[in-house]
Amino acid sequence: MSTVSSPTGGPAIQVQTLRSPLLLNAAFSGANGLLLILASPMVAAWLGPQATWIYELVGVGLLLFGLTLSIVAVRPTPLAVLAITGADVAWVVSTTVTLLVWRHDFTSLGWGLVLATNAVVSVLAWFQQRSIRTAFQAPSGAPDEYQVCIAVNTPVAADAFWSVLADLGAIQRYMPALKSSALTVGETSGVGCVRTCENIKGQVWSEECDQWDEGRSFSVTFLTDAHGFPFPFSKMRGGWRVAPNATGCRVEVWWQVVPRRPATAAVVLPLMAAGAQRSFAGVVERMAGVAQGRTIDSGTLSALPRFHAVLC
Image 1 (tube, one colour):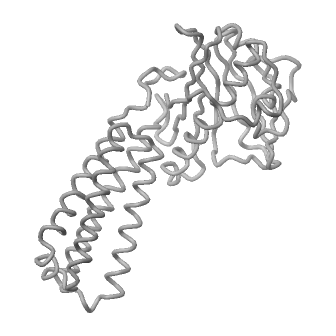
Image 2 (image 1 turned 135 degrees about the horizontal axis):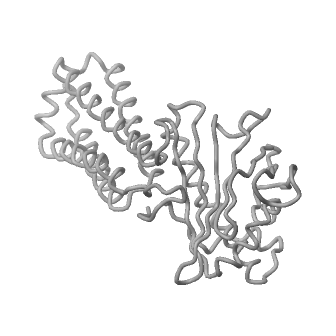
């Protein structure tokens, strides 16, 4: 996670947004784990089933889970929070099924304790998914509008990198996931031109350039109403920004999106961000290589990226 400003002028994703619910979850899991380990006979009397070794085993698992949460909370990522939320949901489902299958073995107090615990875990999971949505909230955007931004530092001068980036129709050269790319409206890159891309899955989409700041940035509007638009968003904009820094230049790539199904935002956005970090580090590296005078061959296209992309 970075603390620099986003390309649209808003604040970067804040670590604390993701950290707080993780620490609450860690404390609750750790406390329950200690109780199950240190007082398993008492817990057995409360719940009903007398297999104390199971409680102790579950307690160890909860302690390890709480420790994992504490470690993740040091440098939380949206994808990690999503995975932990999935684990919480799995806990609620599995313990509820256990309660129903062996319902005659549990005491009335046991029913109440299990359901109360699951209620707390469900609330924690809800706060975690809300923290994901909050972390991606678009600056000055509508409540259902989110932003994903990644940044890569390169050893290339900003002007040299821009000279490569500015050829919008050539993006396929640097992105192995694309089968083709070309300007289908307009002969040169700039406001009003339309770039159409096809990926290796055969999916096609178009982007219309709506902002161009020569040497610094551009943005595009994805034509989401076009037939067969492959992404799960009703509105989608994106762009690139290049800024000089002490070692060369900083490249930011961003998207502002409105999910077609708002309830899926907490799942779609972390996956989108993680995918962008993986793929665009390589894209920026290949562009930087061309800006330095190197050529791109099939071996270079398939190579693992050495550049590192961070969320911004």
